[in-house]
Image (cartoon, rainbow, N blue to C red; front, side):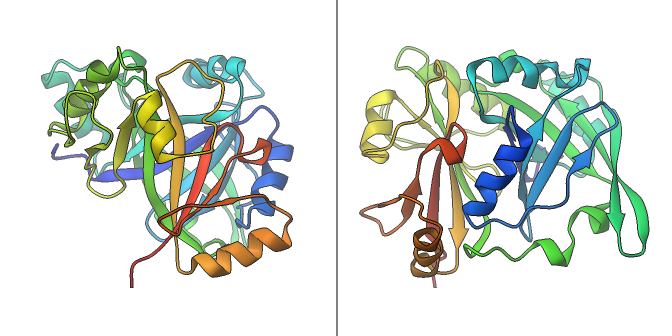
Length: 287
């Protein structure tokens, strides 16, 4: 494992219509932060958990740093990027360079946040990995300078009981499976684990939220009855959340009129227009 890589900080769901996405994810039972506007023109809402979060991102203005997301949205909404936890984006950049992995120089940016005590800037430093290095989507390291601005207690409670990210799934073709697996082995500087060259449960331990890799056949077995979206593989196809009580989550979805599937392991799965191009799974936190 790399010295300056500690796991998954957050994931980015790119959306064409941020107003619609905001309404849909509220209906799913999530609490969203107020709309943020970055210095490079992108806009977002975040869904915060104690240790990580996810971001709904729209790119109404063209900018070199966000052009990947504009291009991504040409094929529809979806999980576009993984932000890696780092204590030092510059150190992460140096580590990857020394390993021969393409990575952009660190860049600082911010967004204003309205707080009861007045407006403050949420400030970050990111180092973006070359898109060719991570089949499935964009990956970048994210260093927070103002965690107290981003992680606010008023945004941590969710009606659906979600308390954190649990897993990310990549769907890839059988032909590209080995390439995808090798790419994430290189990025995290550790070996993923699974069965067979194209096994059904290859898993990369990231330091917290694992990444799993699936072929179309193994994805269909794992997510029976759920469609992963219309993108050409490889892409990030499913996002798992931990909840305190699946029964509680089920009641919230019922009240919202949401269709879901109860999976054999007791988790709940949602895949519809409201999930914006990905499969969402709610799994109860083990006692």
